[in-house]
Length: 235
Image (cartoon, rainbow, N blue to C red; front, top):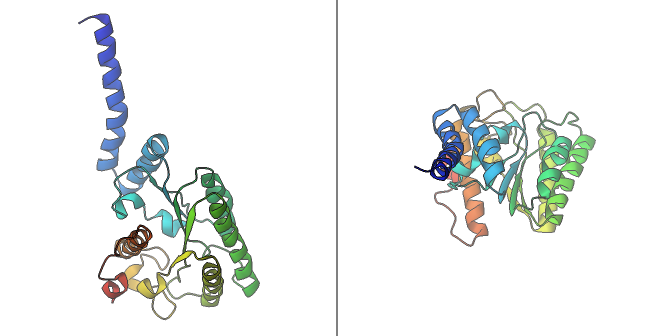
């Protein structure tokens, strides 16, 4: 083999390794590592965001939403970060990704905001509305995911007030709304079978959530939504 041939072989093997090693890690490691490898090593380096998720730990712990949506590509990004308030989601997730102009952004926020008063809900809504406006200005279609109750929710009025304002905004702007509370909650409380610790969700809850979102995407693309509905499955 000539020196040029050997060099070509080395380059080829190196390139294959660069792709193969992350894929092996993606398949063989823990859920947390898989999510990191997909998002940071593969998607951000080789993909372009078309569908993005922004939010706090409830969204973040959903892991690789691309797989949950049946999209086995590198164009569905989970940007959510645990512990984030609406203001932090706006500044740390929404503003940076808006420059990438994704097609769709699924947004959920609010439960980590400290002020749960009526004025606090109005302030949270202000940040949430700014997120939606930033995305719309960038040409991205936001999908509002209403704030979830926690188990034995101590501030149900905050959740109701924020969600009421979000519903009114959606009605005025024509944005889509996903309300998981009828699916995952009862009597303004997250159902025990769908929660690991009173706040965060079980795998069964994420499956129901993902089915709702697949319906949204199907309707958006003029396809018939999945049946049966997730609300029926949750009964």
